Image (cartoon, rainbow, N blue to C red; front, side, top):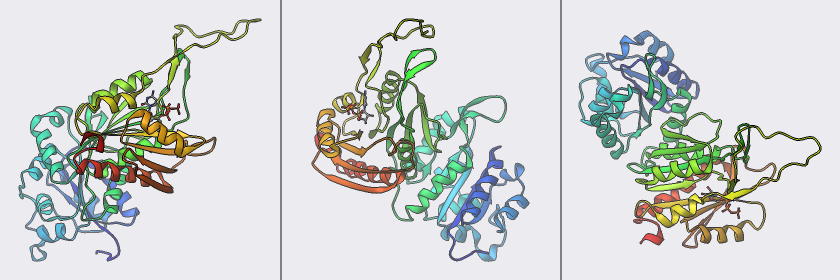
Length: 412
Ligand code: CTP
C-alpha cells in the first residue's frame, strides 16, 4: 500500500545479470524512506523472481499490462511516480524507451511518467558502444532523461570492460539528487558534456616517493555527481583519489600534472564546460631517479631541483578547444582571499573562479566547503558554509547561465 508522505519511486528492472544488484538498490530506496513499486520486464524475471521484488518492496509486482486491468496500471503507475529509475537498463530496454514502444508494463510506465527518469545501463561493452545504443542514449538524454554512464570492470563472465552497472549506493545517490531537484526542471545540463578534474597530482621523485598535496577530490566528485543528476554527460579526470566512482561519470584516472593535462585536453575537445577542481602541482622534480634515493652517512641531503608544470587552466582558457566553452578554475588561498582570487582570475583567463580559504584543518578532506564565486564579468556569488554538493550546484547554476546565454561573456 502506498504511504502518502513517502516519495513514490518506480524501479524498472530489465533482463540482465545485474538485475540481482537492483535488489540492493531496492533495499536502499525503501530504507531511505521511499515507496517503491518494482516493474520488472519479463526477461528480468529469469534472473530474479517476482517473490523477491514483492517481498523487498512490500508492493505488488506486475510485468504485463493485462494484470489488474481494472486499476489501469499501465497509466497509473507512471502518472503517480515521483521518479522512475531503470536499473539495469539493457540495450533492448533503452531502444524500446528511445523509440516510444509500449509493449510491456515498464515501457508503458515510461511513456506515461512525467517525473524525472534515470536509466542505469548495464550490458557488454560491444553493445554499449554500438552506434544504435549510442544514438538511443543520446535521444533519451536530449529528452531530459538522466542516463548514467556504465562503470568499467568485470562483466558477466571473465571478461572486463565498460558496461558494468554502477554500485547500488552510487545509483541511489543519483536518484536522491534527481528527486531533490524536483519534477519540473533540474536537468538543465541535458545534452551537455562537462569535464571535471579532481584530486591532487603526484610528481614522482623516485620509484617510492613523490611530491603531492592534500586534496581529497571530494569537491570534484561532488561536481561530477551533481552534473550527472542535472543530465550532463560527465568526464571525471581523477588524480590520486580514494573515493568510489560516482555513478554515471566516465572516470579517467591520472597521476601527474602532465598526465592530467593530456586527459583534460583530450576530453575538452567536445566539452561545453571544463571545471578544474584538481590541485595541480605547479612544479615537478627536474629529474626522476630510477632507483630509490639513498641517504649517505656523513652527507647532507641532495637538493631537489624543480621545473614548472604546464598550467592547464590557463592553457584551456586561452585555447578554448570548443567555441563558447565555459572554463572554471578553483583557487585555494590562505590569506587576502578575495584580492588574490581576483588577480588569479585575471591571470588565468577563466570565466569563473571558485575561491576558498584553506588551512591546516579547513576544506581538505572534509565534506563541507565555503567559497566565493568570482565571475570574469565582475559578478560575485558567496556560497555559505555547507555540503560540497551545494557549492557544486551553485557552480553549475553559473555555468548553465553562461551556456544558455550563448557562451561566456568573453566569447560573445
Ligand atoms: N591549475 C592548473 N595547472 C597548474 C596549476 C593549477 O590547471 N599547473 C589550476 C587548478 O586546477 C585550479 C587553478 O589552476 O583550478 C588554481 O590553482 P592554484 O594552485 O590555486 O593557483 P596557482 O596558479 O598555482 O597560483 P599560486 O600558486 O600563486 O597560488
